[in-house]
Length: 255
Ligand code: NAP
Image 1: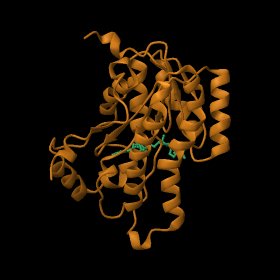
Image 2: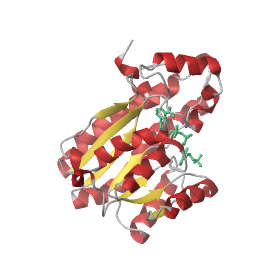
Image 3: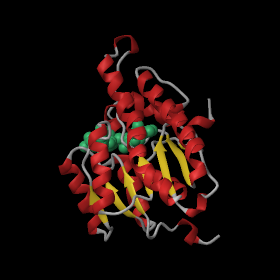
Image 4: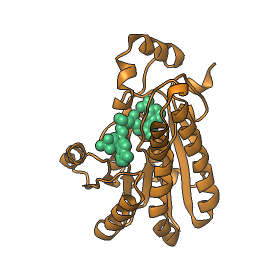
């Protein structure tokens, strides 16, 4: 098999929520396979710093600050990017958030924010990007799911519900858009060392639980999602569609 199958040369990728963590790791990997990158997050300072890091490595990178939960901002940003930068060939719906609280006390506004950030965002950004993909009969969408797409853990039921929803939204996108030549897949990470898990990483008891519960005996690193993203964005996966790829150190393979 030739490595050209994995080349993303000439492709442009928008990765939402990519100023840090998994999104930045995926952006780095797509860039190393040859893609031009559009980074996104809300905080323009952190976003600018992330873009500078990639630019210093010679990556063709642009920063596009917008809130993925706000329909008007999403539509304006995508319209601006398409006009000023060029067509988006690869969309990674990665932006996400966590809020932990006992379910019986979980505030409604936090429930709604988790759903908006983790699910509605993928619907909004995909809708804004997909029409030009359909016109070109070509495009890749990768939705970041979770091991919590299938499982639950105390205090994060709304997050688990949102991740189950994005997994099935992924299948629905494939069912609706595969006929236009688009491939839509998901990546489901296990426990990855990022800011989202800051509170858990500081908790010695939780660390021990993750290490025991994960057959590989450790947390994953953000750059360990990159290979799966390059595969799903490239010609190496032309007949892979509506699939959720688990990158979890065998977390979901064991009881
Ligand atoms: P993270 O380190 O907290 O990074 C989240 C990123 O999303 C940041 O760049 C943040 O920047 C951006 N973001 C948040 N809300 C946004 C909004 N409304 N609009 C635009 N950007 C927004 O999180 P992470 O751990 O890398 O998680 C990335 C994705 O992987 C999430 O979907 C998460 O659910 C999923 N995931 C994570 C793990 C894990 O163990 N870490 C496991 C499974 C799945 P701003 O705050 O500046 O907007």
